[in-house]
Image 1 (spheres, rainbow, N blue to C red):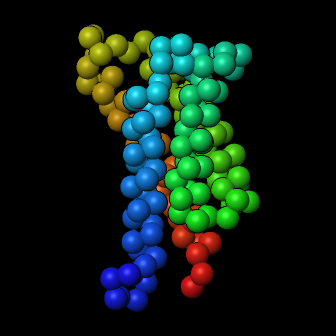
Image 2: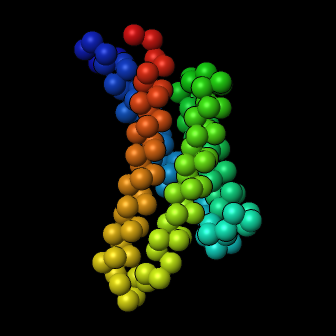
Amino acid sequence: MNGTPGGAVVEFVILLILGLQIKHFIADYLLQFGWMISGKGSFSDVGGYVHAGFHIVGTAIVLLLGGVPPMMILLVLVGEFVIHYLLDFAKIHYSRNVSAQDQPHMFWALNGLDQMLHQMTYLGIAFIIYLWLPA
C-alpha cells in the first residue's frame, strides 16, 4: 500500500487495532449499562455475559470487514469472550472495596490496569491475525 516491503501488512494490522479500539470504546462506554456492571461479579448473573457478548459482536464486525476467514473469527471470538468476561469478573473482585471518592489513586490505577489488560487482548488478537496473513 505504501510502497515499502510489508507496508500493506503493517497498514492492515494498524487498521485492525484501530477498529478494535473503536469497538472497545463503544462496547465498554456507550453500550455498557448499570445492570451489566452490577452483574459482572457473579457467574450466575447475565449482565457480565451480555457485556462480553457486545464485545465479541463488535470484534466480529471488525474482523469481517478486514476479510478474516470465518473459522479464525470464531476462534478469536471464543477466546476474547472468555478473557473479557474473566478480566471484568476479576476487576469487580480485586477492586471491591476501592472507591473513587476515598482512594482515587488506587481506583484509577486499578481501572487503568483493567483497560491495559483489555488492550493487550487486542494486541494479541492482532498478532494472531498477523500470523495468519500470507507472507
